[in-house]
Length: 438
Image 1 (cartoon, rainbow, N blue to C red):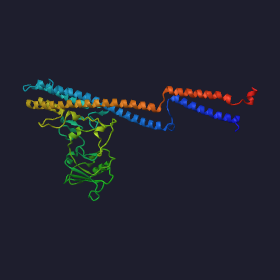
Image 2: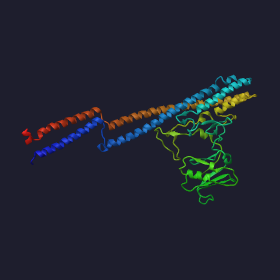
Image 3: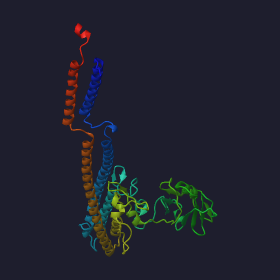
Image 4: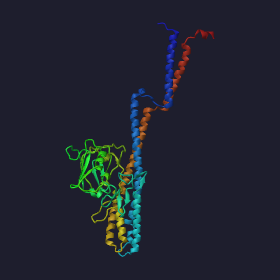
């Protein structure tokens, strides 16, 4: 086969272009230190990189959740320690030791004033905010959890901490499925003791989408078609007809929750009382990377997430004890102050209240200790997540990036190859007639 100068020149040109392309490739690698820029360059490493980056962002989110929860717990712990200090001064300190059966009214009034100052301090600490959240509000962090009624009763989210009676705009409530139905402050006493039935029955005398209040049986029947939502439930209740004599304003009935969810059939008693035990055990879970899972009934598995809820009544106490004394620390201090301010005060009654306060102060100290344990768990979790983040970054670096020395050596080698190709050109390509003419 005859080899011409044109063939030699053409092949040399193609090889030189390949060398230039390779030089550009290795120059880019040495500049960016990336192993690949396109998925097609290394599909296996690219797939691994995608997995690692997803894990990195998830871990970063878990770390942010943990850090935020840790700061919230530390703020809560500071407030609870302040409450505990003031309560312990009353329960075990010298304040009450100055009171005897023969103490005069003036002396007792001075001590009563100290107790009422302590009560104010407790409320202020329990209404502490972290950012824009009230940390002791349980599942409702938008409003101050503790307020004082006109008669001096302590309310937790509008509920009497001693009796569980609603003293807010809800009046009376019922819980059906995912929804809370509030009957309004003015309607509360009228509906207290009623039963609400949500049905799906085409044969019912109550038409689909309607509600009827039957006074004779203290029953509210709401007939909803398939697929009806919480909004449909509220609309039906606010336009309910009344069978009998009952002076209420049905337009004040409201439904809270996600009103876009389906309203399911169910029955619930309507009451102006709230289960204080349920309020004290409310949960608000966040995902810390513990394998968040949900049970068949839709509840978060407690071991798979962290509960950030700290209802104020969970450590201040609620309800009444066997002696008829409040189990709430604020209420106990209030009754002690009231007893001290009486002309004919009872030392025995005061002693009984003091004993109850000492019992509750022990429970308060236990709550502070428990919160410290939760804070330590978050600190440990934060360290774990930081270590995980570091390990993921190392893996990302090994998967996507080159060692600088290796990248520069590869570039220098390719540069040498390119320069060698240039020098070979003058030997491979034969001189032309014009070259001779020079």
